[in-house]
Image 1 (cartoon, rainbow, N blue to C red):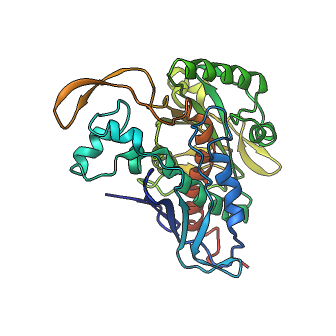
Image 2: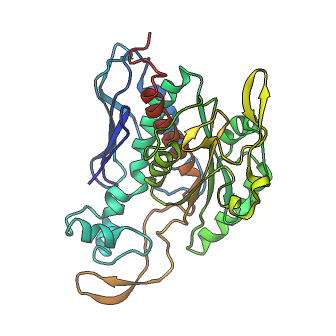
Image 3: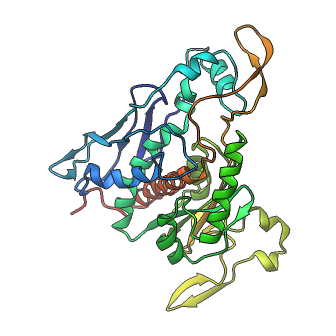
Length: 363
């Protein structure tokens, strides 16, 4: 079992969807970083249900608590324990189907892996609820990265096959945060909302694609052969429930290009080596090349849907059907956007510390 991510800046997650709380323990944070619960809360609020009309009716306050590692408004260098209590918990719908394997969920694999002792309510540790912890540590990582000028952004680029038009990073920064779907293209966002509303009425769900961007990343982050920057980013992003694909730069489109089309030509700009295109997505040989780091994440449709599906009663070992009732997102994409940005920041922070670019004591 492995519930920890990172080498120098490490994150250990804990909690379950319907348990007392969810949270993270962060180790390796430099001492002296100004930090308050309010700094973290603003990012957590972006992930909360209710920000998007596509989200679940389950309304948690998601109040951030800092239990250790901060004294007099600054980090101490000791492990930081961050916690959010689960308050709006309702087990009734899960009690009805406790022996039925929900299609698309980790019920079957978790049951076998942990011998049936796992907490399956709401998916337990496999629920999207755990990403509240990811966002908390991401807020800390972003503050640390800001000391070396690195910024992470994320936005919705597709939902249900409806694609947003290409926008500048400044437009992402200014527009996406104000949109209920975190989409920087207002026209596309309206179409996406209509599609979500339609599928919600049908008892179904939609997936989509999120693009994450890191700007002003120093050249040289990454530890080949096996701790490559893209490899660790993919690992972190795939830890987000519902993520089924990760691509960098041109991604799978590169397979349809010629070398002459895909290669990023080098050039000098104000005495700095840059590339004229960015099909590599800011990473070459598993190492950052100084260009914007661009990654896209495929989010599957929410697995919990009201339509009748075929399944197995794992206690009786009989074929049956299931209708999943309860409180679920019709589209998880918008709530995953802050999580993608957070996980990118966590990995970049770890690699920046490993490269010696961030001091262990900040003054």
